[in-house]
Length: 316
Image (tube, rainbow, N blue to C red; front, side, top):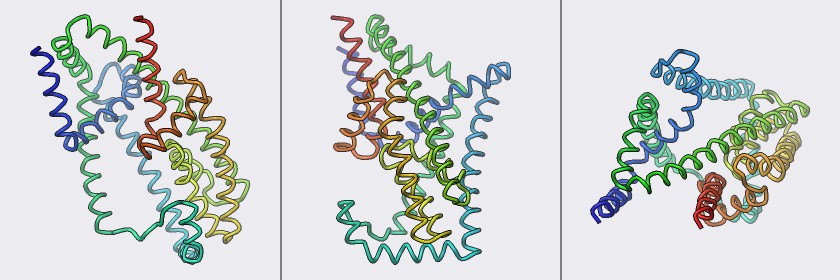
């Protein structure tokens, strides 16, 4: 009875403090994603865990910096030539002319952003991300300590039998999520290659860079491809007018359709043990009811449900 009360109190506290705990949730996600890379480095560097954690962080920071500097270089080059400013003015003119049509197609109207609120949200998000990154360093550095602590707490609260069953389930869930992340990485690489190839054929400047961005954005189901198309369309608009912008967007749209309907379901379905039809269904249902975040989480959640159902069936 006491254990049940303690568990209820813990869940209530987590619910009440959910906003304050967001940075630590970010830290857990960062630590989980980077742990395989840190473990790989640890084997190569003879067990110097903290050094491996810092090297992993430096790798991610350098990659992000190169991405930002790459976009800055593109924008600076276009501004110096006046092409980006012309492209943005052209884009604004087309938007004003066709905004009613766009509203009908999208189902909502895009309004001018509130700059003050946008900056405030960006500032708060940056602080939370920084705290999450620091928390991730500690979680990665002292991984064994936190795992032992979690095991002891679960053992005391749940008992030996329930704790053993939970460990088996968590092990299977970890396998599903790890396979999902590897599948997402492979899928993104394929999209980056196909997008870069398509834009290079059209003759877009910085085709490889824009293609790599499309591959990264593709991590987000449905909305990711749209985000990936925007830089390609702007580059086409700046270089060759509306015709080249449409051609660039259409080429990436074709790549995304191939990826969404054939590549993604097969790769992700194979990595999570789900049939491609179930993958498509999970993403569609999540998008209908939960929005963007749930679309991202739809497939791993479906994989976790498959594990739980299989475990339940084994006990029957």
